[in-house]
Length: 546
Ligand code: MFK
Image 1 (cartoon, helix red, strand yellow):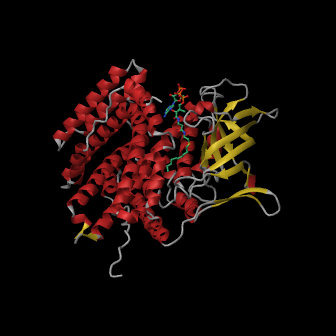
Image 2: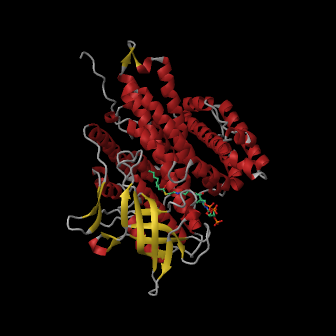
Image 3: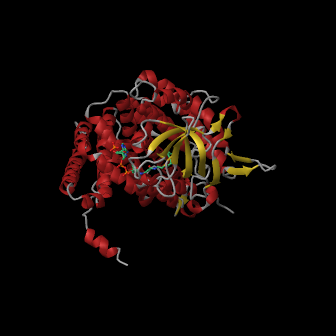
């Protein structure tokens, strides 16, 4: 064997990431940067170690044991190494707690930590997202008793007191359509609410608490009659689980994440707000977990691009390095440009979230955040699948082989478009945010593109946004037309917002004598901004005929 291919090496994901560093250089004040850099350096080190550890060992899945040897029900889950290390890393680097600091950049800084930690964490970030969402929803509820009870645990910087929270919504009768929830809440004679029912996808089943939707006994059907409850899942100091874990799911990806089917047989519960409008009460949680989803999707893209680019710099074929072959270089550059746009939009949402929460946002930015959150989630969810698939192809046959660690990237990426709302559910959610959101987006893009160094690109953004707005307005009265075009509209708005943010980044870099963002912008715009589609209901019907 004269020749062996080299495995891809992972550069330090913080020190080698110009997009993250550029974003933080532009936004984070100097007096906060040193502390942040220490955490990001450490989390980047951990990511490199985790990649090397994974490439030298067999992957494990969590294992559920329902019964002990003597017939007692135990429902014990053995976790992977990364999951066991999760609480110390999370609390040690303030991955959750830092996002709730009283500073307008706190959320952005916390999401930079999440971005670096995500893949090394083996999706421990999933329950972290839900815990962050639960903390946010409890704060929004104004329920002081529950805040005093749970927030010191959810936002703890000490692993001994840290708690994870679940988000229990999905049931067999209602996945996206949460209104189908069958779990009931019964008020006992002792004044205690208790939950009875089955939750079909529970991804934080090892957590200590959860926010759960349930229908108070005797309440009407539908979404509006659901109530939101806070529950604790461990029985005091014995830490005996108080819920029944029926089984762990066998999933396409996210194998280290113990997603479970559970049932509740009288679990004590406390209402978070009034005994109705549960979806309204849980919405702050949804919007936070959707932001996590986008950040984690972008993290997967960053990993895919980094590995494919590293490999191209060392792999020879046809007598040349791949990186020196024009078509391969073009493919990698196209991937970079799409990633750069997705990164810009996602971290703008993270920054906006912090500014809105801290009262530091301009008036139009509340509506802007409401619109951009589902846009970032739905677009990055889809893009991550495409980009990871392209990256695997960059490795040829090796990209299809399990123990390279590469197929896992693609399998895991598929989840971003599904959980926390599918692409279509999120496209319809975008319609809820359009009323004030379109004007807010027009205002924001004008500001982002002031003094643009790529005026042609800026003009294309403005023109495409205007036709998207006209399209939305012309279909306004025709709900079916609006809904059938919602995905095209959402993708167009997402791409316009991302391009406008790249214009801003290019202007910032120009002052520093850098040109990378301008190149990404030109290429991104070349891929097209307009994804609008005509509402051809008649053709849909013809194509779907039996
Ligand atoms: C590593 C990354 C980590 C990511 C975390 C991973 C965790 C994964 C676990 C899961 O996937 S948990 C399951 C997630 N499930 C969903 O996300 C549900 C998807 N379905 C929806 O989002 C539907 O759009 C929804 C259930 C909300 C629609 O139901 P309805 O019956 O049509 O609700 P409706 O009447 O439109 O809205 C009810 C209220 O909520 C309204 O307010 P009002 O009561 O004041 O009228 C809405 O305006 C409000 N609302 C809905 N979505 C909102 C929102 N408010 C703010 N933001 C939103 N996004």
